[in-house]
Length: 138
Image (cartoon, rainbow, N blue to C red; front, side, top):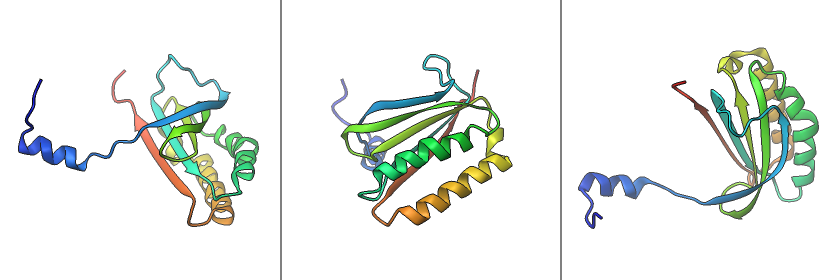
């Protein structure tokens, strides 16, 4: 076991921010597969404005997911709620079989709808995160 770090390693560890998040599954939509890796994973996490949680969840399930399902290559998604740790309250993990959805009119419609909803319903206390991860090798 190493007890001393190189200067380079020490600098790297000074910049790393680690967080522990524990989520429970709320719902699964489409054909999201636990044991079949998707080519593209999109995760989005949000903490809605206090008092807007119920409205956010209704919108996401009843309006937003049906719109996302139209994206080319969409396989499915899983929705989660935080039960421990830091980070946003709600997390969704979308799976795609290609990255073509990112340039589609359907994706643009999804993003416009999300921006419109969040702009009208979230204030500056809302927290949002979004990441796109693409598998490089088959």
